Length: 355
Ligand code: BTN
Image 1 (tube, rainbow, N blue to C red):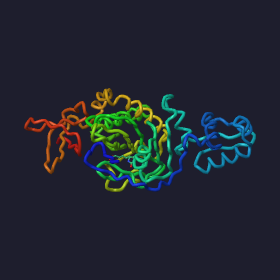
Image 2 (image 1 turned 90 degrees about the vertical axis):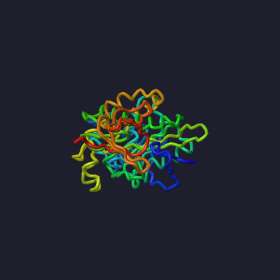
Image 3 (image 1 turned 135 degrees about the vertical axis):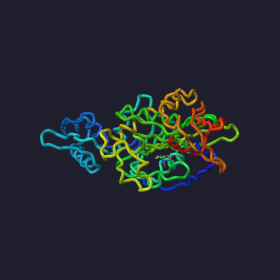
Image 4 (image 1 turned 45 degrees about the vertical axis):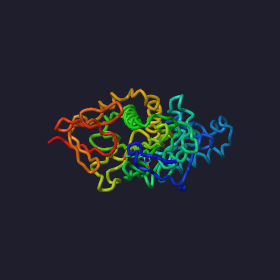
């Protein structure tokens, strides 16, 4: 099985099995901790008596106490007051299936979600899962990645507690000439999710970068397998890396100033669980529209590359011109100064500001 970066159809990726440091909360494994968390989350800000919880959940008070202790150890801010009970006080920054799932649209509530404290790359693991038949919509989310991957073999810096690193598996076939649409659709989906949750105004740098206040806060890496006979791609993995409360000092020096995050102070009023759910909802909704390209007008409106002078290299030759439009297949249309128009589907295009 070959996997290709959708944007670079000639680049092969190896997908050797690697050992994941996995802490997975699959849907099947519902523990007392998760049940207690759900009750506290539903009564956020109010005290719930341990006795009542024990009664309703059909477990002992000792089990409730143990679950509360476990949740506090995991970083949840739970206040315990004698005779009043327990209360979830602060917005936990911890990723939790039981905070994500209630925020999913009904039609996506049953998707499989895997959470990892740490993994090398969610895209790498998602490709393996996709190959073994993981159902459409299966999503992998990590608190941190030790080998997060970006386009063109680059590294995607993925520090803990501050970003969202996720891969969504689509089990659907589309013709390879529409492959780039997976990325354009995802860019719009991530912008929509950010707009729904915050007052930020995300923009898109063709083809896969999301900018806020001129800095890249999110990168997208879509990968898929290609059936050479039918020229269709299938088993698509959409990798999304969103910097939410990553501080500038957490980025390596060479990308500071270019990379940014939604809340550079290091505190986000919106939890990573909320972002995860909103992105899953938007991406899966968008996936249903890949063939029609219904999101394309919005992509163009948000695309900062349009109207700018750009340059790119193809086969060692440098081309320069104005980015005048985006074709139906997601290609950037560049008009050179001599009037010749070139569609750019793959490779790197760098935006250059008009002087
Ligand atoms: C880019 O900006 O070049 C794309 C970055 C994509 C990063 C995400 S983070 C989750 C998923 N797993 C990876 O290893 N990469 C993608």
